[in-house]
Amino acid sequence: MQTLFRGRHFITLQDYTNEEIETMLDVSFDLKRKFAMGIDTPYLLHKTIFLMFFEQSTRTRNSMEAGIAQLGGHANYLDTSTMQISHGESAKDTGVILSRFGHGIACRNCFWGIGNKYLMEMAKYSSVPIMNLQCDLYHPMQALADIMTIKEKFKDTNKLKVSIIWAYATSHKKPISVPVSQVLLFPRFGMDVTLAYPKGYELPDWVIEKAKKYAEQYKGSVKITHDMEEAYRDADVVIPKNWGSWVTNPSKDVVDNLLESNKHWKCTEDMMRLTSKDSIYMHALPADRNNEVEDSVIDGPHSVVYDEAENRLHTAKAVMTLLMGGK
Image 1: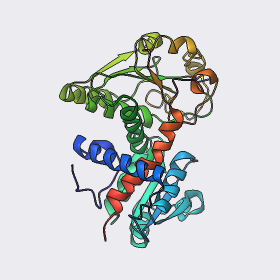
Image 2 (image 1 turned 60 degrees about the vertical axis):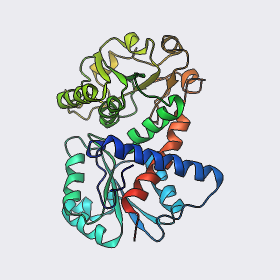
Image 3 (image 1 turned 30 degrees about the vertical axis):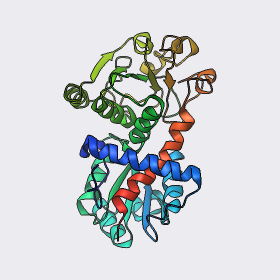
């Protein structure tokens, strides 16, 4: 078990070893058990974290706010449109000042080509941990909750067949950060990962190259297909979720010809019948119901989306405890 976390930033799980991620998961499971038993966990008494959101949030905001309260601390929720950021204040100045006011800064900034750079700039100057609540490239909080959920359901992740599948949605042009974080993390735990999407929805080349290196190192595998049925066939875990065509088309338009030509990329009962007998359906939520997935699937026996969403609380508490803990 690794213990050297205090004061570190949490921008991508690539910055943490497998042993360190296992420690985060151990702490998450311990906090989940204590939450179930009603045992107080006052590990961050009187600590303050600033939660900066450039976009809307439900699970991420509330898992952080509830989490820090359950740890004995306090969250300041900051809608960045009401901050001096909206008048041009720099990431450096914001990071320096907020870090002098409290003990941690967490930020969501998903603007393509901007978000990760913004977080890295804050991290360069902040004297307290910067935590990524989702940027244009990574969503480490979600990926950590996802692997926690998979471990709960299957225990052994080696050679587990996991399919990350693009799905049709019209709600907004979604970031690539969830599938990127998943495809970079899962092979590190020995999973056989299939990434499936229609042509035009590629992830960055460097992501695939790095994922394949992880697979080789940790005895997993990474396969890309443009055949939706192939991805579902015999899969133990399916994660059908939309992401935008940011890599091939940085336009902010939500609906275009490419999207509309792929309406059939949908998680249906017929698709789920192709999966293994005890397969699970996962989604980071919010799901674009009846576009990405049929109600009968997301509300059906294979779905673990609410367990997955609850685990966002426990993993958020673990990350904050490890990074912000101590005197």
